[in-house]
Image (cartoon, rainbow, N blue to C red; front, side):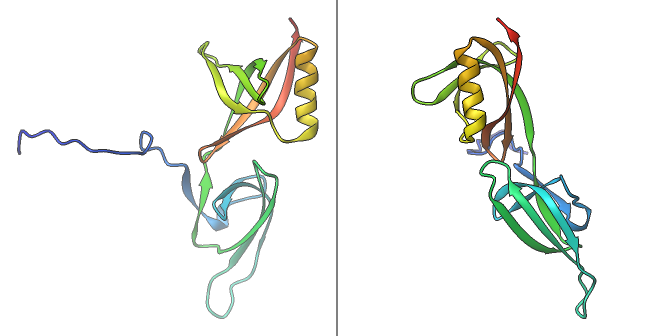
Length: 159
């Protein structure tokens, strides 16, 4: 053993993977799957029978959790698929800036200022109107594969 110190330069974050493998045959409707490098919620799964060459195939239809685009993929049921780590966190809304960014209060009392307002028209309208009326609003932020987006809104009563 040498007494030298080894320094490793890494651009990764704490070694946490953005996805984990799961056998295609075990992924169900309302679960999550990565299709074409996008995190998707599974809306439909169909499995074909084993053919002449052996593998049963799973046909997945998923909706991208950030862009709401429909994506499809066909994978042999015995093969592994990537499943995204999807987290949902609630934050209290503090402020909306002129350039479309929101200021959110975390559980630890810090502020989070790197999120834009959602692109979904009805959710955007609800957030802006509720904030203008001075309501206490809590937004749900969904994060997966290094992306984050506001996906829901709760009113926790008047100030």
